Amino acid sequence: MPGPSPCCAGARAQDPGRSSFYVHQVYTWSMVRQLIIELDEPLARELERAAPARSRQRSSFVRAALRRALDELAERRMMQAYKAQPDVEPAHFDPRLWERGAAPKPSRRKRR
Image (tube, rainbow, N blue to C red):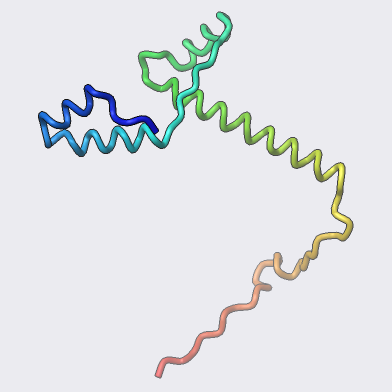
């Protein structure tokens, strides 16, 4: 990880009260990764309508869209894997455990 930028280091040295701000910025910066992506013009216009840059919601919108797309991809891959190699034995299923009131109640010990 690269060291602090000279402007931040100078501000930290001049104002000790800003050190907590500096630590927070470095910690936050170290936990995220920036990506630069190129969008064609129609997609960029649609993104601007859905999450305008001035509303400061664009990053969370893009993160949510990426999360949803990656989750769907993982689901498709899992479904393909199960189709390619299905379970040989049926899963154990005890219907009594799913019936209302059939689950055993925990026993209570008497207090002394």
